[in-house]
Amino acid sequence: MPNRAERLQVTDTTHFLKGSLSLTNITDLVQFLAASYKSGMIHLTRHPGGVEGKIFFLAGTITNVTTDTLSGLDALSDILNWNQGEFQYNPDVTSIDKNVGLSVQHAIIEAAVLYDHRSEVVKQESTTHTGTTIDVTSDERSTEMETSQRDSTTVLNDLLMIPGIDAVVVVGRDGFVIESAGNSSRINIDELGASLAHASNAIEEMGSELKVNTFQDMFIEYGKAVIMCRPIGDAIAAVIAPDASKLGIIRHKTKKYFEELALLF
Image (tube, rainbow, N blue to C red):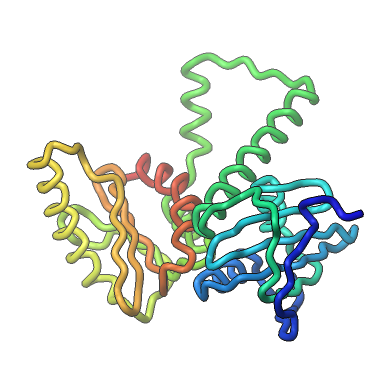
């Protein structure tokens, strides 16, 4: 007798989409199906081990996610990091139970935060089990942080590794490009620098007049490109993407790198 989470309502399974996890990014697949307001189920099998997972959709919303041992956002955070195995999308297959109930973008962000938190806990537990303790003075700790601080070029190149980002640019308040990485055929980087400085100055002035504090970030979607920028110290950092399909994961993943850049500029 199947458990309640496994009971399905099947209306049509005549057309299937399937492939290899080594060739298909699960996050991209989920966002693609959600953008088309598809309903159905993605059935996944991870290798090695043969662990199975299921992601259920309903009109662009993730309703239910399970693996052999996990459910809900815990299961989604695990599945989104599978990169070996197979998947098959079965249209119009729905789950009676709901253990997520979030938009795809929201669910992906929450799952990514959960995965990062879980990884940090594992790292801390590993450090604790080694029994290693470090006792340094305040000055020594400060020196260690300065020594380990990465340069801006390294941080920009790490930003380029985030799925969906074509280019990254750091612009001074005067509109001149300080540093950039990557390449975008959609936007002239030098022209972007001048435009961003002008726009951000105007937005900060508006925030001051409205007494709502300084602006935290700015997202602009055009027909051929998406720009997301954020103040970093005395400069402005911006990332360029072809569209908004990965905006959720970009906003989550870029946060720590923007914080690093703020210390450098």
